[in-house]
Amino acid sequence: MNNKTTWKSAKKVTRDWYEFDATGIPLGRLAGAVAKYLIGKMKNVDFVPNLDMGNFVIVINAAAAKLTGQKESYVELNHYTGYPSGLRKEKISELMKKNPAKVIVSAVKGMLPDNKMKDTFLSRLHIFVDANHPHEAQKPTKITV
Image (tube, rainbow, N blue to C red):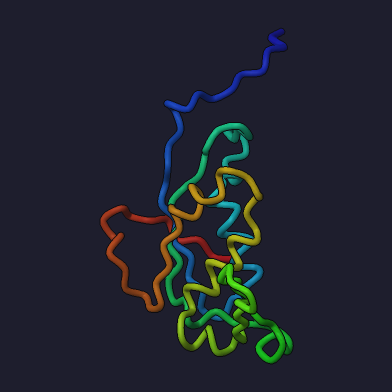
């Protein structure tokens, strides 16, 4: 009987491409699923917590993601410029009309762990407002949430 734990090495990590369609999916549910694939936690057997096991994720139809309840009326995204009285607030409903990719990035960013890997994970996230994207050659696996 072998009682040794084997860990996967960084050289053997494979990065796959996954595609999510955001049409009609609540923003938080979409962000949680995307974060799970960005981190690589869906690789149940091969997941190693101290290695970057993440995948590439494409989100299409970002403008069609929905907000449940009355979140459109009261949720705000804040940005501080670094200057006195530099807090900028913007309603999420206005931002969804102007730049839906920014809303999805913000939601996914909140679902990722607060460590040095967050920027690396976010660099593999590709968000598109409609169904057209330039990554068809990678043959992404379509995921339904």
